[in-house]
Image (cartoon, rainbow, N blue to C red; front, top):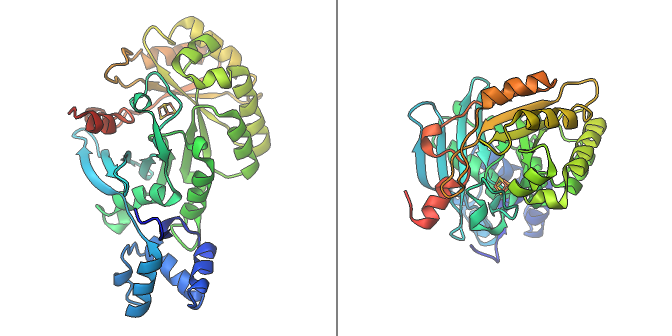
Length: 351
Ligand code: SF4
């Protein structure tokens, strides 16, 4: 890390323009450099051949471009999923996953190094929280992954569902979304972006005000406060009634339905009574629409003691309650796809 220099990957064109003008260079240079980085994917000022050698050297003194380094890469044998362990400039590590869907290639990126939320079934929780990722480090995960593929196979969709709670790093995530969707750069429509939250109520309310066309997913994982608080400590701060009221308000404000995530854990949250309770709670959230629950067969994580319940059985129970439920296609099962597990194994020396 070079603290005196500016992280150019985190700057929007107008912010870069202010820096370039302060260097005494004409402002069109900012547009040129932004395009070189975000469209041409040139990450070395010395390779920006439209610029004079002298200006390249000045840029090098003022800014840095640090793409995460791919330290480990695990490719699935059963599908095209690839999981990456990305090393950051301060030695921290995060995970990124590239998934291939019929509609395009999607990156699941991390938003924090570690996480404060302490979910009991999560491989990242026991390692604690280290720091927030910068907007450039989030974007950098996508650019680092893209380097292994031809331009035609670049990432076209993003899921903020890797390590960290995106809404706990609110400002940086918003700046990342502005950068990702900027028409002078990658220009990705936010309709191709999903953001998953464990349920930080004030931030969900704030996000509703931004009116972004992204898809919001909220991880529920239980239909009663006692079970949810045991699985997800965040529920003690924002219990279900408060969370679901915020979800209903989000829908009224934005017109966009929220998807609820539910990891089916054997003996914990997969009973007929849990399905009935979930139905009772969710039906009023989006009146006139059937709520949508995405069921995830929980990934086994060493040390948690949780095992996967039958997502298909629970899906049938939910359908009876008037809830649309889908079972998430599990990609890359053979490459320890449980979020945070690759990083955890690297940090604890396990393989
Ligand atoms: S599941 Fe997500 S929010 Fe919960 S501890 Fe893990 S990374 Fe954090």
